[in-house]
Image (cartoon, rainbow, N blue to C red; front, side, top):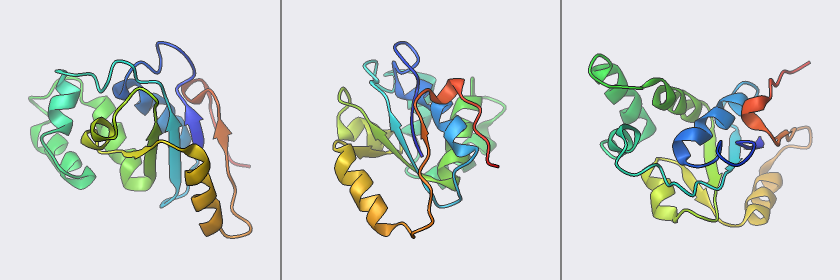
Length: 146
């Protein structure tokens, strides 16, 4: 799955990218790959509850446990909950020419700087009947399989 968050303002930070990922997650196979292309000029964003939660854990499984254990006291957990669900299903990469790899990793995603190298590596592992789906406007798309 290759997707984006559609356009300016929807791709302003990593928090917003979860919307595009959630569209891709509806049809990606378990164990598949989602590549999210987003500018993310506003970072994770810094000093947000979202960043605080992400940086308090070291893995997606720890993230899900943290959310469940602290659900009654956390604000705005739906976005981070969906992020954890998506990442439990698929490997998620973020391509951004504005974010440092360390920031992407701190948000528990895989950074990618060269899309052609990543897609070539993925295609070399794909079986002959595998499918690639491109959702250029992720959160404005309702994907389905026939």
